Length: 409
Image 1 (tube, rainbow, N blue to C red):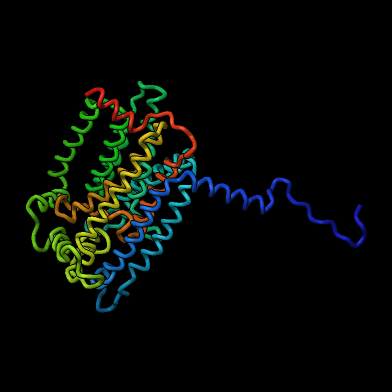
Image 2 (cartoon, one colour):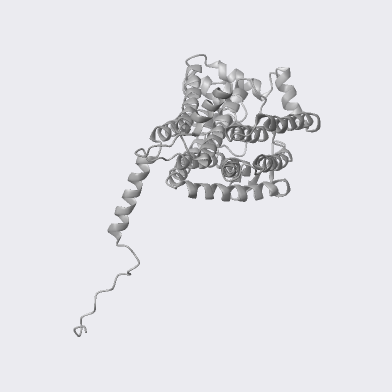
């Protein structure tokens, strides 16, 4: 019974927790995340992203000037402004993924792999051609499916290779090799030899850590080398880049221009926005931003950038040394091999030690989908390597792998 004229208080939904409880639960989840996440790795990533902002600020005027026409003059800092937006989105994506547990991270990786593989199949038919290659889809922004496929590939490969724990007789190497062959075929239709090599590198690292016999790995690797030789003879794009690399390039070759830009600043650099060779360098804000760093900030800062990448790779591997979950070990190794491999391939191209492959410098180069893809990979890595510091590990992981190799030797 209620008193006439007095309305009863609304009843709270018994299934909905009070707002205060929700806030308290969210704070507790974030405390757990902060305790378990690799804070040192996260700090190194954020530091490199911050330096990437400075590098794009240095390269943005040069690229804007090259892309301006008589009718349209681009804002000198257009690429910087866009880069900051994409970095903030990427940072939010990375943090959001790192909060997930391993099972959820694995599911997202598998879903991303399936979706991006389907888009990769569509690229030869509806993709956009740029600089002689058809690699992008226009969906409101330029999306390169292979960029997001790489972290999904590492997660799926780790999932498949970890089946060996259930049944050592399962043909996991055949499954993993078939997936690699399918992706390599789709990439070479674009053509995209650089990404194909990177996928093969991720595959090699992961099957090695999975304990697959060297004889079986060598047989598959031999087939891959044979495919590379065929690529040289049947793909003009790949042959031209390899010939240019082996021949030393010319004064008008992009890689040669990049090297001249890199060394123009000496050890200390010309100073921010004082570089001159970058004004003639194509893709100064993307593929060859490492050369812009060398010209304006000096070779010493270039060495610091390389050291930061080495620190990120080593920190991730240190996190995996005592990992007793085979899936986490393989996925973490595959993801860091992707990021580290792409970074060092880009640096080697700028140093004229590797043929030009059209890859960006992770976390530093300007890019929309490429920035988000790298942050996606690192978010999965942070989620997979989360660990309760109060739990004792049972052993295994990379430490046991290298101990077994020493015993066999």
